[in-house]
Length: 261
Image 1: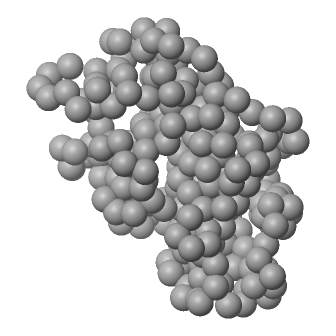
Image 2: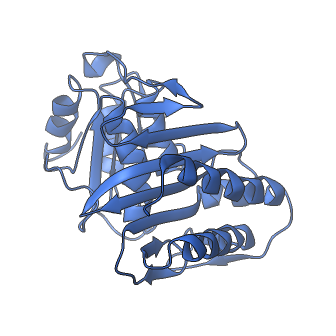
């Protein structure tokens, strides 16, 4: 029997207890592919807990997990980010979350993002709307880019790769109320769903970064696409734009501009 949204919420909240317990304590911190791509003991502890819990109840399912990769299976597909916002966590910045999504037949059906420091649990089931701690969410009604507060992020190889999103950041910074960078793609998407931000874009992500948050934003009324406007923002090469229907085409238009800001 496939999991329910309640099952995902329980798992996310339990993993969140581990994150909260590890926050602010000295940890062994390692760099992965780049100097600013970090992993902590708490990342690994949270992921190990989630893998064991899922394998115990849904042993046939496939799991894509940030730290340990692809665990093959013949059932549904789980996307797990055990600690989205590791750099924040490692520096003592209390902006991070657990992100869990479940897909069947190539489509994400369930998504949960849990922020343990604020006890905010964002949830969505396809076709059933999006919620924050049980209260319904709706995207903002902001109609123009000049009135919009946006959020984005940068790839881990920003030091070395010219395709690093800095040019886009500059373009939007002078055409909007401002651009923020929280350091958690999952929370960025949830904050769009909650109308805290009006729009979000980012390039070169991973599926576990956006699977849950993308569904939550869409179920709150956002249009969620890749940078070309296509529906698939999970398959490589990954990119994502999420905004209310009025702002979404305006954001795409700026992203497609060439030359200096």
